[in-house]
Length: 206
Image 1 (cartoon, helix red, strand yellow):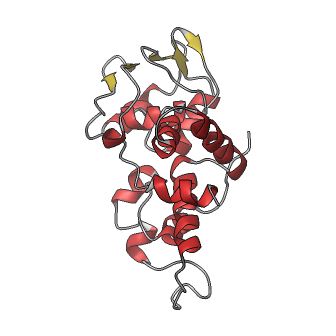
Image 2 (tube, one colour; image 1 turned 180 degrees about the vertical axis):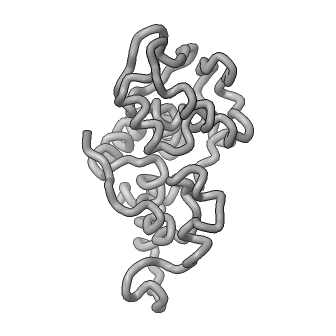
């Protein structure tokens, strides 16, 4: 599985805001954005020339980093979204939200998407009674998520649930039994990603 192994705090600093890539650490004073609120690199504090293309590109990069998706896979998501009916940008965010690793974070079963991917790859979760070890697996309406009976990561998952605020309305979670259900696809107003999807559509439409 291809993945980004770069420094995560630098990614947040590059985008100028918290993307919550490191779970609990992002809530403390150790957060890279809190300590150094300027882009990384030799010219991080220099003046940066703004342009329409730059703004659109930064929005795409932010979305990729937020969801932990690489360039080729992100482009595939966009192509699928553009072929669907409705608004392309909303279709794109909806597919990214329904990724298995992202849903585990939304449910509070993982502190970060990187931790969620590791738990999935190691076979700690099932969907509709079958073990699924693909982080990009697209969850559908009425899918039931549960911890695998033989999982040894129960305590790690319970620790993650303590950091959880509110579970989105399109999901249903039982933190005691570590089970959940996808009630429906999320609406745009229910997607908390700090992304302006229209800028991404404009970038790919050029």
